[in-house]
Image 1 (cartoon, one colour):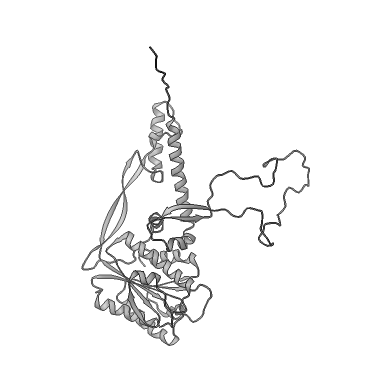
Image 2: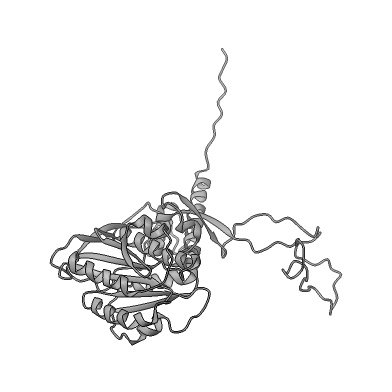
Length: 380
């Protein structure tokens, strides 16, 4: 009778665990690199123009993957010497080729960067960690809720970014002590302990955001992109962190009008600039639709500051009136391309109310600092 042949094998599951651990460590480094480069990443055109649902590639210039490099100069040795050097020999010179100053194609490698694939929601979670609506007060009618994450338990499974180092060390010491070893080391998967978090919902009173943007002819494509970048992240922040917050979109040139979200982010305008028109419309909306006794009111206005000079005094008067009903009024001035004098920002220096906050955006790196300045949940 023919005896069947059996092959006994055993998978080395430590290799699987190592691969998973390396992948988690890699993702942690990606997140750290994103945090370190938020000011540059936040206004990437591929993000602002995305639909917010698909994966996007974020360039991270401070991070590189391990890889083999081609030996361009056909060197026999990598870094060690060949034993023929003598005292006084020049070991290296600053190469003149490939420095960007010559003509024609260069042959030296440039500065590499790594493209991390991440969803807009994951990026938003990193951006919004420290943001909140400032000066939020209880009103007579409470409908909105904010999310917060609270530590609730310690478990044996979880993601490496939530590892509890103190409890992991204690478990390792206990296991080693049972074996007669008094030292810490040789961490095993059974030693790992992870923090777990529960999402808590905190009720707040109603809030309305009055998003006002200058769409006049002086707001060129770059300036409008910077303004829309701020409002893009502001909108996602409010809808991610708060429930039932209303956002009203107002666009203006010499006249102001309420528009829908699609028009606000995509429709262009032209003509002159009279900023008082949008402040008048904001006041009208507050009086007719948003009772300050029921709503926390947050007006935010972005412009390049190029306003009709005779209109500036009226703008100051209207802002001071709006401030009587507002938790915070934010004014952002886009100065991309030039540093103009006698702008609205210089005129608004006369406003001393602590709830009037201003920010300047010179280029795309200024969008994230403006978000942090306007949306700090600490008392003003």
